[in-house]
Length: 190
Image 1: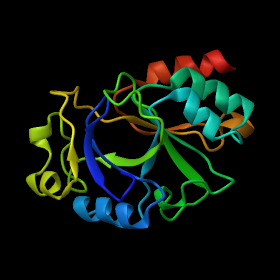
Image 2: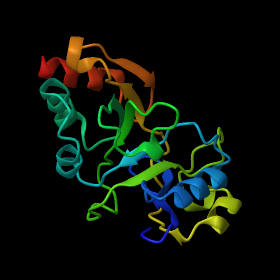
Image 3: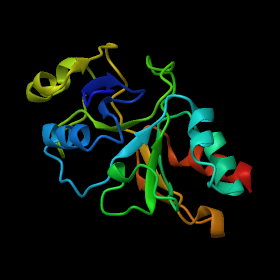
Image 4: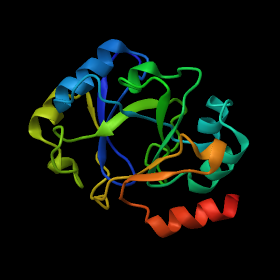
């Protein structure tokens, strides 16, 4: 990762691709492997929730309380990014950051963030097993980490960009964490 590598790794939901979020070359390689449009955003994944929150001190009190309830877990949270952190992950919207902290990942001890996306061809099916990752992606990656079969449901994507100001949130994509669980976490922070 430190030298521009791209890895296929198991998250808590599906297999993903990861690279250094600050390396233009690595991000370009990851996007090329997926066939993903370069202007489309990806998420930044931390493997420790406390480290993720420490890295984003500008997140407001109300939003922080919700993040503490939802992370780690099978969610990707869209949060305000007023300081423009991780610009290569933000695509065409530098004011929004996708944040992900998997639960129970085999990479739980990793102490640096990665830019991540699912290990599939853009728009293709999610990979539950390393063997489900397209052969061209596996061949183009520098590291393959196999953790057996995963649940196979991608993360739930939740838009929290207005949550701090007025409690507004939006379920962008249903996934591993159900709407009821999200609503319970939100109710507990009110």
